[in-house]
Amino acid sequence: MRKKLGVNIDHIATLREARKTIYPDPVEAAVFAELAGADGITAHLREDRRHIQDRDIYILRSTLKTSLNLEMALNPSILEIALKVLPDEVRIVPENREEVTTEGGLDVIANRAKLREFVPALQEKRIVVSLFVDPDPRQIEAAVDCGAEFIEIHTGSYADAKGDSAIHAEFEKVRNAAGFAVSIGLRVNAGHGLNYRNVAPICQIPQIEALNIGHSIVSRAVYVGLERAVRDMIDVMNS
Image 1 (cartoon, rainbow, N blue to C red):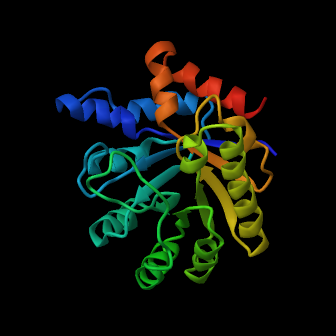
Image 2: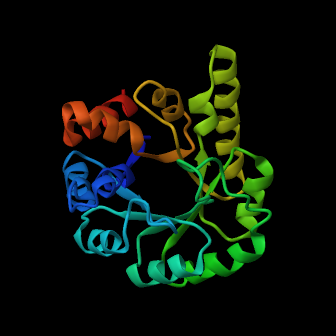
Image 3: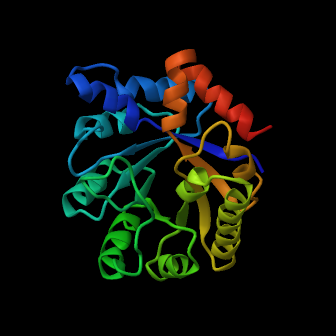
């Protein structure tokens, strides 16, 4: 089964916010990504608004021809925006203002009570809910208990592993987690740290439906342009 590609445009907005200008425009980047074959666009509206801004989310919703995947923390004010914007999917992620990027999966077990409020509120608006989790069976079981339809497996440890044995061990965690999730009724995506060199093995895991990738695509786009960078990733994923 062909894996879908969701292109994360956060780092386009990071470049814009570095100078507080109006360019590069993440909405324009999303259009180029769609034209290149992306199956969806991912954007993380963080509490500190370090890259994506509220206006971006509203314009994306009215502009995209594919699907909008909104990443958000368990924050009531962001939930309010999500319920107005009505993205196709919301992925709930952990958030720490001191982090450079998302550092790990959501602790679903510790946040069970809050998730039982957020998840139904989103689903009532027909928004698909995904939880970003480490490849940990306990967290995956908790995702079912909270009513999520999807999980996205955090592949950061796999991407950061050094040496064949460590890489294989982390890959096996992801593979086993995907199989376990499907066996208990969840659908599965994956992402974080994936690039043109390490994505192919993850694409061989049959239970994974889509990959959400941003940093490596935007980095390659500096040299070859965004449309080609997206097409190159699609080629690697389907090779």
